[in-house]
Image (cartoon, rainbow, N blue to C red; front, side):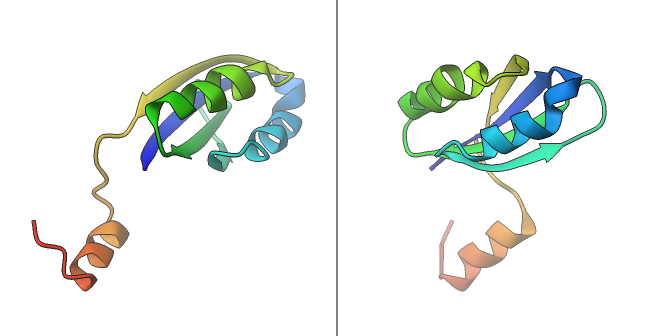
Length: 93
């Protein structure tokens, strides 16, 4: 599973509508409205790198109100939840 964080700038008048439309895209697991330079952050979870092109370039970036995006692809997760799950499954190293 490939996880990517998509930082999104939108037209201010369309933030809620854009967020809802983005959350409806298959491959987007979560969308957050945030403070700072970006208006929204979406989390994409796909099986292949090629799927990111479909989710982000072909669908998300074409939603009305989306003005720009920057995508960060995750290499590894270090969350306590993920580590606890790995150890409970007997994962070794």
